[in-house]
Length: 222
Ligand code: AMP
Image (cartoon, rainbow, N blue to C red):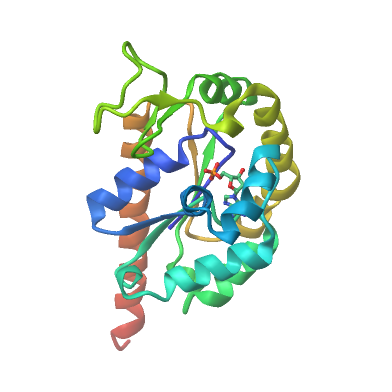
């Protein structure tokens, strides 16, 4: 499954919950890049400059990362992708990587720009374990590990505006790539994470049932 949507739409939260509930692997390309930055890897040094400006890392690099990650054994039961694809070239590459593109569910989370800027300015992440929170809370510490909550360097307002511009220019055209497909659906992402999660589950379950019925019809002789 691919979860699309602008920065701050809730892709990471929904991807994590859905993957956990269904025993799937979550792959967040943003997390992979941030880990590379932390470890001081060459990829991280290159990516940091781009991420700090709110731009996109090259398609070639991102497609290579996702292709390698999807080839590993732990990806076989299924994967929830958060932050990939972000360009039409990445979406085309993903179709080529998948054995059957009809197996791909695509969910678009829709949220107004005003709400996105509000959410991203308030968002904090744990400097130790990377957990994400809608705000700094009362004591500014992580509930999971006690680490200090900090603002992501690309969540300040000027960079957020740039990321939203980049989203409109490079990522929104993806909707045309996917919107005619049977397994595409939009959800109002301005609702609470719980309500979005329920809608997401209901959509996937009903589409999966449709698919399995179609499969049975194809298999059974007339
Ligand atoms: P995210 O955590 O998904 O908001 O990603 C943080 C940053 O990582 C983005 O603003 C981009 O600079 C970079 N990034 C993540 N995923 C991709 C991708 N699929 N293509 C290009 N750049 C990406």
